[in-house]
Length: 597
Image (cartoon, rainbow, N blue to C red; front, side, top):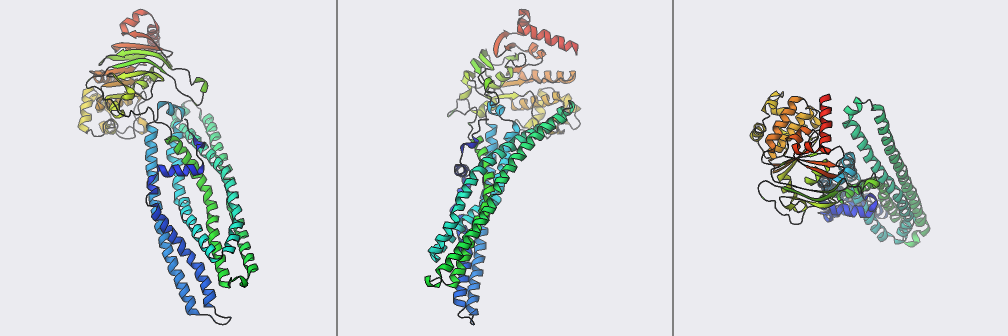
């Protein structure tokens, strides 16, 4: 995946994040105002301490308890108001951050589904899942604590700094000058920490991909006794993730002690300067004590922000990866103004189509075309079979017809309209793909069939079952249409999953059907049911079947033979058999293999 992870600086990433989450900006001024009131209320306490000392203690033996009580009451009321204001700010920011993350996750999922086939081939599915899950989760954790800390503590520092300058500008300058080097230390650490967390998030995505493959491929791994090998590879990926995270944590561990050291030095410098200035400068005992409290109030947020900075870099690293996906152009792109497809059956024209997959893993193969100068015209309603050896390009051509990607060069027209000029919604309604390994949700057969038309009723599903003549199969199921298929349809056989996919396509009622035929062996009865259902489904529709079993090609009106990305033969089954060319060789090899079974 062409993911520009390192393209954003920390400031740029945060600014871009605010642009992508407008709900965070809504009412931010009011939230900041509540945070300011909260900070101001806490600043009142040092001021009241100063007043209590200077005005409540008149002499060595006289204490004005009434004045001290008034100042204490004022401080208590101020703290109460501060607590209410800060809680309001926290609630407002928390609610908006959760809504923003919900919107961001929803947009990310929608964007991933709109990426081109090439982008999905470049990135393992686990890596994309990591963007939606763990990378977004880092932002959730940040807003639960880090975001609030930046808002509340940042406001506190500004308010306290202003009060310190008003109290005694000389002592304030001493405090600021001594604490200033901490900013340079944090800046230096932040650069290394940012790179370390970027690497840790990358390794986390790799780990999730490896674990996902190990879990979803458990049956195949067990069948080949490859458990130890896969476990060893997964352990290496997990170890790389752990090493990257440990390195980031080691760098982050430097932040908190550095804040503590500068806090001690700053307080010591303020006390020393205050003693040196003495009462002659107009600095009273109460003012000195109050200023020390203010200095602590100023340094407390700095100490906490050194801890938050560690979490902030984790969140920014996750945000960069999310933004990297959102910045990827959707593929194929939508037209500015779509051209409607003509009503009725649709023909298909493939004009000089060439296609190459881009590959991040192997740049040497990136420019090698999978299809080269393919030209063919398919009339409306014709049943066409695409055949060829593995790697011939037949599946790729089917995907281009469905516009899961656009040709590198050339053009595909549906009903005379170029596919890039067709609106995606209309295309998905008029053209339906039945994948080689159809994806089924862990639900009932009815729910999986209705997926293609959410508004359909169970009566509509029953009608399609009768139209495709598979009622006998439905009756053979333990709970009929209410039979649960299991995760990814694992409770059904490969042939039964194909039947569900055909029912799904029948309910969608498309004008063009692209069928990537399953390669898995199916029993004789299921194959008869599939053939019967496909015959009914294809009636009156333009059908392109990517045929792996040449019995499908024998039943088609027309056979297109691909070899190494080139269209090498075009004709009916009977015509091609007589030519003794590539199709005849494929058919003879298939018949030999079938007879041997």
